[in-house]
Length: 343
Ligand SMILES: *Cc1c(COP(=O)(O)O)cnc(C)c1O
Image 1 (cartoon, rainbow, N blue to C red):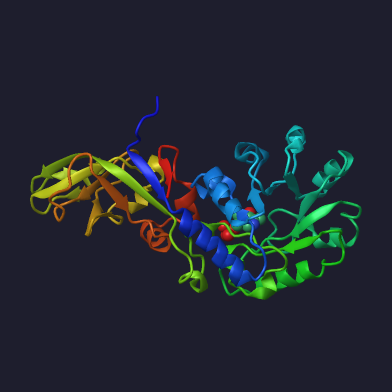
Image 2: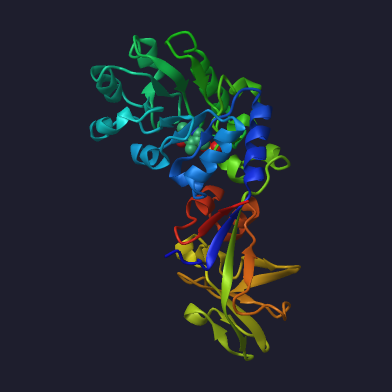
């Protein structure tokens, strides 16, 4: 039996594809897509199907479990965390390849026969990757590498580190068998063509995130949480709403309780800060967001009734400022209780 869920993510496939195209145009080279963390919470398969249909040929996931869950989707799937010993059984997946990140992984991959792979080189973030010195000294010699990539630590800032990382990757251009070099994430694309190399790897901006001002006018929102009203009630003047009674009605107030809470990724930081749309009305979140429920002041929406749907304000830069969460967290926190509905 399939239940009609009381919360849904309204997902705009046209905006997703338009964002991907705009980023590729800005980069001047092909764009892949980071679909790790279940497509940043939107649903990796739904995202992948739309981007692959639009021409995307390179997808990035974090783990082999994510590659397995994604399945065969018509594009190459690169696994950013490389291969642990425990992953070797999964590496036969057609179209999937590891992004080798440590000398140990390089050895493991070579010992297993050394099929096509990608490699992450650390150019200064000191997170994942083999060192540029090791690459220069021959660590990767003889490997069949598609993409040699690195990752920017400060792409969303005007930082001297960006050029240092760019130059370190460029210095390895002819040192390996790699067919392509890749450096830029979403914000890196906005740093200019010097950072594009042969392939860019946007994530956040595909999904409506705006990591830097240069992308503000070209990125369209993709995901809008919607939820159903469970109860409409009148709270008398002086009555309190929600846990710890943090909101008290200054006058008799019409209140709606909706089917969404922090377990769905509508974080407690939206308490007293978030807004919901119903037609023309902007309805403020009042009191504390609960695990499964959020209260709204609906005094300006007299027709809104039990069973009606409302749309949460979720333009990511604004929602991040309101809630104190990052745009990344706002997306990846979107929970498993939403119906994910593409239009
Ligand atoms: C997540 C990730 C990306 C995408 O980054 P965004 O900031 O979301 O665009 C690109 N490359 C790597 C290695 C990543 O881990």
